[in-house]
Image (spheres, helix red, strand yellow):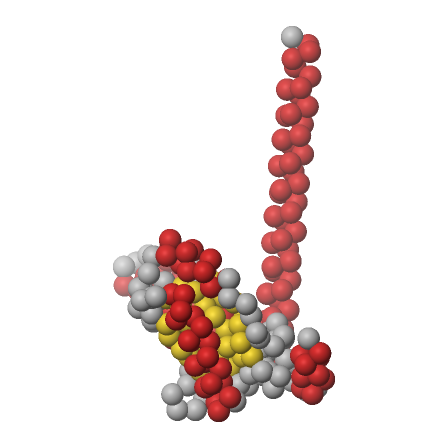
Length: 251
């Protein structure tokens, strides 16, 4: 019995240690997330003078409205915490939207911005950045999703037009009747602004199943990439484009 209890004790200790480690990791992750949120808030409030007044206004307005409704039913003190909670949630939502708008505004027009936006999309999207490109940092990114295949281009319109056509021809050979969509990111007529790219993608109709997506991904991964080495994410403002172009040519 003693011989049998030793392994059981060891396993129990290992389980406790694993749970403790998982708890520490979760706590550290939560702390890091709060730190990042606080940093984002500080950065945003410095460049967005209306942020704090709007957030405070939402909390006050929500609290006042709910408190007023509570007065009608003679339960104002009971619903007061609910009003505050609703106001805080509304303020957090507005904060997130304003941060997102600010980030997209800074990234817009920078090489690699569309690829970065695609990589940050939530949901079942299979993104392959820079499947075609030029040394001027124009690029076509390929996305596989429930709509089918979406080719997203960024760069000079007169160059990406031919890039899109070539990539569409390559993809069409392998996908059969599955729909292929093409999108050019920009602010000109017929283009999709960077900040609206995610919305545009999610509005496309669902044409294929998740299983078909897996098959499609396997086929398209077999395509050899002729793309230039695009930067991962938008280039920072003031970056030396010529230096990046020289690096792309060497690759």
